Image (cartoon, rainbow, N blue to C red; front, side, top):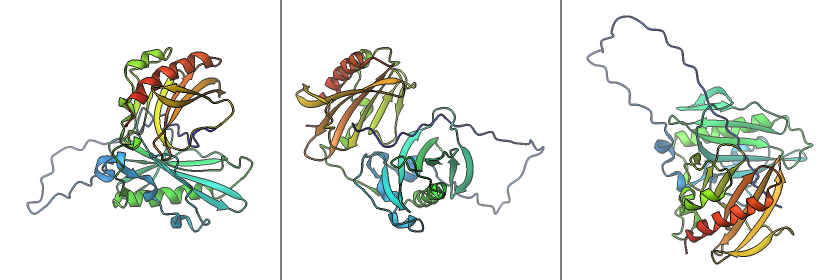
Length: 312
C-alpha cells in the first residue's frame, strides 16, 4: 500500500520580542527619504501559489557538494523532492510545501536569508527540517531525510537541509521561480476546500468548522486533531494496486477504496484517477482505531460529492 512520503507536522510558532521605551520624539532630517519597505509576504514573493512550480525553487546542482542529486517523478503539486545519493545511502530532499501558521512552530529561529526568517526544527536521527517564514505567517518547509533507509546514518543530513533552505530562500527573495499554466481540466486548478461541503457531516465526530487550508489550494483538511479528521487532496501518482483495494463506482467514476490501521488510528482512502495523466484525487478519513467500516462509509459519501465537482 502506498502513503504520502512527506508528513510535515507544524505545531505552531511563537516569537518573543523585547522593546525598551525611550522618551522624546525624533524629528526626521528634512532631506531624509525613508527606505522602501521590503515586501516579504508570500503573495509578494511567490505570487500565485496555486500555479507555483515547486521544482523550480531548487536546482539539483545546488547540492553537488554532497552528491549528484536526481529529480524523480513529482508526487504532488505542493512540493518537489530530490534523491541525493550520499555514500551507500539515499537522502530525500523535500521542499516547497506552504502552510499558514496555526499557533506555535516548534522550531528555533536561525540566521535570516535576505528578508526572510528561517527556523530549524530539532533534528532527529533520520530527518532535519527547516522552515522559511514569510511576513504574513506563511511557512515553506524544507527537509532532508533517510526514511527509505531507516538504518542509515548520514552526518551531513542537517548540512544538506541547511544548504537547500538557504538556496531556496535566496531564490524566493529574488523571485527566481517558475509558474505553470495548467490545462483548464487539470485538478491543479480545483480548490480542494470547495470540493466538499454538505457531506462533511457524514464523518463521525468531525469538527467541520476547523479548516486547515493551504496557499496552493491543492489540499484541504477539516479537523485539527489527527482523528477524527478529513483531507481532500490532489496529487500526482497512479492509483494503488494493492490486493486490499476494492474498486467500485462512485459518482460514475471507478474508485479505489482501502483502509489501514496506522499509528493508533483508522485511515480509509477513496481515490480516483483523473484523465489520462498521473493526476489523482483522494479523500482521506481518519477515525479512532478499529473503525474501518464507518471510516470507509464516510469516505464514500465525501467522495461522491467531491468527484461530482471535478473537471470533466
